[in-house]
Image (tube, rainbow, N blue to C red; front, side, top):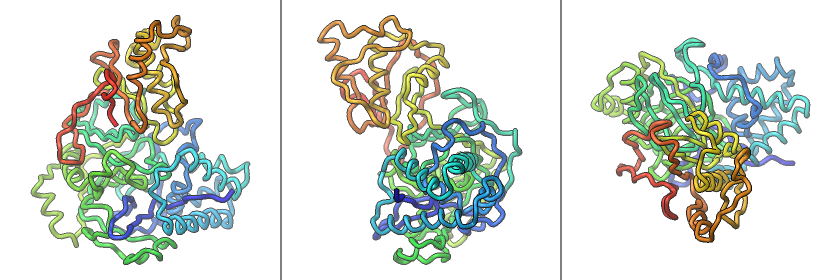
Length: 475
């Protein structure tokens, strides 16, 4: 079957007078050309799991092809021919041009379908025997990223925190993708939280451990030599786009976190809390300035607002500030989170099949609670929320009150019409991205709630709402 919607993560698209949300990566020299001898950073993450190919869409694969070391691995480890590699790249370029012409790249799409299209293209090109090995290798490299110009911490110095909803006791950045949220911790205390824009389903943010080692002010952008660039107005491949230009979507500041991902500004407020990028953490310009200052302070460098404004005043000068200390960046995909005594269930935005009873049990048990210990009403709300926040919810016509493995109430139903009605009213509604459920046994437990949450709008954070009434669920 012919593949669709293949786009390079390196691709940044500008639509008629409006800069489209996009990400690209650059070295400190601000060249966007791929390094000819890129060295993969030591992987601080666990080995690839059974979901090894979960992140491999064609855009992910195309981004990895920008690294010559990846091609070398494909040849040495999988014995792929130059012709096979060229065919995979050409498919991506051709589809990229088609998508640019139809302005389809920013559709939210379906992540599972995107992964299957990538799998079909890979199987058609390299054969069944090598296809899974290629996807496993691609996913492993996508998880760990590739090293930036500064080597930073050595292998073993940084590690992922164990268990679900783990709370840092050190200084690190925690990004929970389905929550559209980024938290900055300093010495075990949460300093500030940010609502963020995340990668589109075909351009997913990676999961795993990355490193923030430098802050780059006034980043430039160099469009890659791709067919889609030739069709863009006022854009020429290889021609540097200056910082501050309306054609440069990176904003005033970027923080590389391992190729091909960044934390960067340039996003309008409407994109915060939404799909917004091609594999990066997106912030507004005001957010990224604030974050850069706090990140520098966390790493032991005092960069004031006045200093930041001085760096940004002359947009023709790119300033790279090396952080005195590497700050780990933990990229999580957690759709079930105990937070500040409540259970939060987020939409499975990348279709990873994470809203399951098994994962729910693991999260609850990490907080000293078994699923069977929930009240009948709590279980009913949780089950409905898990279903509603899954990528493909099942249609429900009656209130659910049990059917939990090992529960003595598994075959019970609501004892009255009034109770059924009440439970039905608490169900999530269409297009929600989060359900918050109050559970008595979780009081005082879990990951901390947001601190001074910056929503990107310049307005105070609205009060959190739980599932106690039909209008009480965050979107």
